[in-house]
Image (cartoon, rainbow, N blue to C red; front, side, top):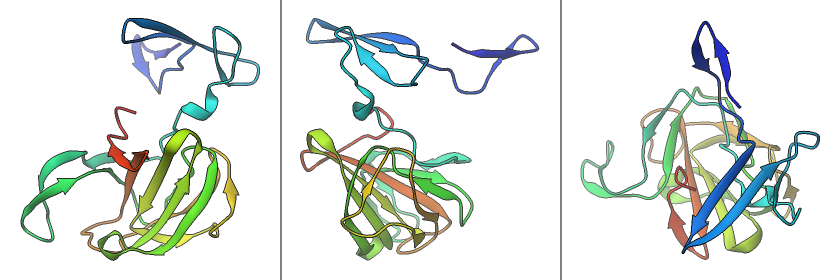
Length: 175
């Protein structure tokens, strides 16, 4: 479902149904427009499997890659997350329901929050200006957890966002 204005698409499209094929097995996903949640063809809720982008951003300033020239360290190294450029103080939201397992400073990441989710997933939010949540607290998808900052090894305000699956970092944009 996509909005159109003056003959041009605008806004973010809403996914109403999808077919996902993995290893020649077909999976169907449907959105219930009354509750806004996604379900499979057996009416089991899938909402917890979807991660929401954690903030409104201007642009992606750095993508997930195995080799990137670091703007501060002036050398090549892996960048295993996505950087969302946004103004200092912009709200950051939990991308999925879970429990806060870490809140504090973490080297070049600066101020960090880590959220443990179901099915072996964890998300990391770095370079934050301020936290809203405490360690051990449970959050829902879309809950405010903090604000964009420029802490740690960073040249401008942005959110460095990572998704981990069973301890391995995966590309948040593909996920």
